Image (tube, rainbow, N blue to C red; front, side):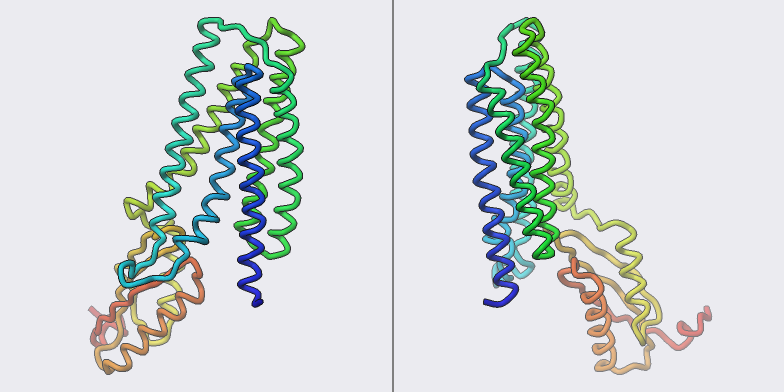
Length: 301
């Protein structure tokens, strides 16, 4: 088995385990929150859904948008990533709004109910499980030198940390029944994080759908690489847009009018080669050759 295939299988394995653990924790926390009358634990279960999204993104990517280009999809399948991410983010956003409304209503109308121990046990179990998952995933990602897997590991850690104040709020409400509202306030705080997570997930997808250009730093570095190619006089009309996590770009480059068509083609291929070597995030770039007179090289009007 070659190294690439081994990395792919290891990535799939650690991600599947993470996805399974997340599904179990989400179901356990939401169920325990409902049974134990804890809005905070229910909200924490939904918040775990934001962590699960990263697992889903990697798995769906391996199955769909990582597929090679074909006749019906000459630019690839990366837009599937954009649409999937946006749908999941919208579902997460809706859940955050619903939890906020429910918890706020309970506090406003004084629907007093003290959480049960089952809610506290679920929160503590989630903290322990996510910390173990974080350590294992990080070790695997570091060993494979996979930034995606390491980033996914830190999602597990953040989920574990977010469960700590939830557990403390539930414990406080259990020990001091008159402070039952602490559980609802914790639910509102967690739901704010849920809504913010949905925003962070959705924003890049929205920017991609309206063909937002990469940061100016990327475009300036791209221009610098093209200008450094032998035979290029100037570069202009650089345009780039995201296609999933990749970038599609095009640019107009000027060469001396005295060069042959064959030489111009060679220069364009050299520019493309340099760009793709320096920018692995660029999927493809189209180079338009524009001939100019010798005066352009000397900078005369």
